[in-house]
Amino acid sequence: MFLNSIAVWRMSSFIRKGFRFNLTNNLCCKAVHDADTIFALSSGHGRCGVAVVRVSGPASALLLRSMAGPRGPRSFTGEDSAEFHLHGGPAVITGVLQALGNVPGVRPAEAGEFTRRAFHAGKLDLTEVEGLGDLIHAETEAQRRQALRQMEGDLSRLYQGWSQRLARGLFYAAAGKNTIQDVFLWAVTHCFSRMAQSLAHMEAFIDFSEDELIEEGVLNEVDLSVLQLQSEIEGHLQDGRRAERLRSGVQAVIAGVTNAGKSSFLNLLCQRPAAIVSPTAGTTRDVVETSLNIGGFPVVLSDTAGLRDTVDSVEMEGVRRAKERVQLADVTLVVVDSTQLPQNYEGVQIFLTNHLRSILPNGDDWIASLQRCLLVLNKKDLLSKEAVDSLQKSISQAEDLPPASLLSCLTGDGLDHLLDLLQDRMRTLCGDPLVGSVSLTQARHRCHLQQCVRALSLYHTYRNMDLALAAESLRLALTSVGRITGKVGVEQILDMIFRDFCIGK
Image 1 (tube, rainbow, N blue to C red):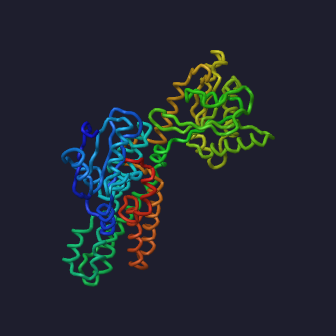
Image 2 (cartoon, rainbow, N blue to C red):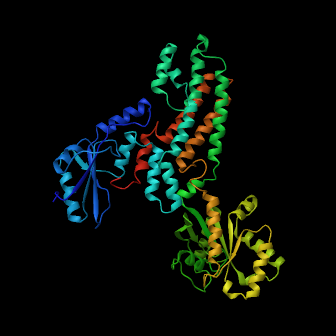
Image 3 (cartoon, one colour):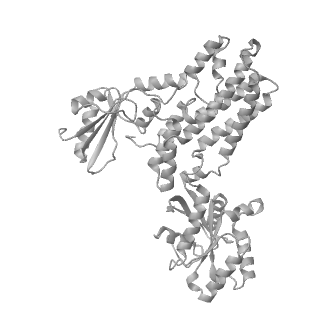
């Protein structure tokens, strides 16, 4: 059965991407060298032209020699690795998997275990692993571009650059009271990150200033570096959550009064009957949600109950949920029955302003609510040509109103203009993932960077009080950034990251 199989051999020595802290190295080496050999179907189940079975671990060479052919290039996991390209019939695949499982020391792989081994081998750091996971799950072109950029290490290089600026003097503290030659040797062999430069200078000043081994002005250099670094990280955090929004999808909510045509609008955008349409007011009671690809950007579109006063308890709950979704929306599509609009400019301005105030959040967030809103003036097909022209002129001259589009959900007339408005809004909300500096993609990254900024703020507090406490603040900042890339405190988050990978990846 195996004579017609094609075996692809991949092998590489244990290779690290740069230096790693000793603690991480010890954990990585133990995880790699003590591991079982694992195997899984990597190409997915079902009938197909070619199937791929992936094997990784110390018994890979033995398995391949006993079943197929010679060795080849370096592997994804950093271990001896083999892939069997088979005919895709279920019986062939099952036979190969059973044969692999019968070999002593070989077992089926767990979800994401191949990528986990690549991480332990130093082939990927955590941000690159997360980028690979996002690439696997990408549904739109913009998501793919963003994930590819992260997987290729752009985010990792940014954070490692920050680490270097706080890391240079870490070797001074580690070397203690040894000679300056020993300190330098320790630095060359162990120090690689940028954030520890400031911590290094600080601890060097504490340990060696009395011996006059450290040049003057070290603390001033630390002060300047910390200020610059804090400013850069705070700027990185103020990204409007563009990359996070692109990764999870823009939350767009359809809102309005009953019988404005909200469900018809949802069905028009989806190009399918996703919601029930009825002339009876209050048909939609709960939130109807669907995912769309608009101009390459992911959108989670929600149709909501019509907003009105009611004594029906079920409809009241629907109205409450609708208002809640509007509060949380990235974009609110307010659908208005255009046949109810006045025929003069002043009347249109007043009517739409009052209508928006009844739907959008008021108070301090009013301006922000308007900026998140698009007006959809539905039922264009019921207006005369003169009424359409008059209404379009009134809208173009209106002040303090969000962008508006005249639309017929029945005929689709005006849909192209509305989609153009939506795409422009998506670009504003998500940005271009290939332009400018790389943005935050995970809430986990944001949390650690916020902790880093707080630690850097503590440095300024302790700077003139206690240098040891100031140095500890820098160490905490370094640790926070290290947790993003997986250089410190990694074990507790590995399961959370790898659980979303499929078996065989």
